[in-house]
Image (cartoon, rainbow, N blue to C red; front, side, top):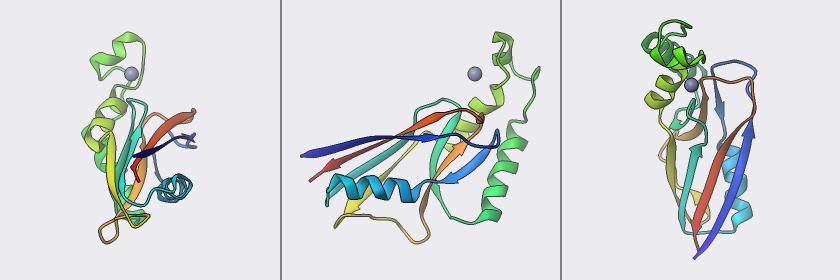
Length: 138
Ligand code: ZN
């Protein structure tokens, strides 16, 4: 069995933002040379997500509006912020949108369903963060 590990770096312009990272994951798969296996992609921070959905800008705005409605940004609205942080909302948004995805690798390609793409969901951005890509197989 072979494995390939990569750390993608992201630094979003907005505090909350959705970024399509499919091409970057596919580039790592190509580098790995693995033809059959599994590809794990996870956010390495507890205020950011990795999820799979449609690459449609309206849907991305819907996700951002929906998470903001469920967990609105509020400096004094969360017990977590009594620690001196202001990102209580970001932790909740991350949990709603998920930590990681696993995609099957078949014949050297990510074996997506129709319209599936991989996205990074940032909920406390404007600083450097990492995403782990781990591909195992042969
Ligand atoms: Zn925090």
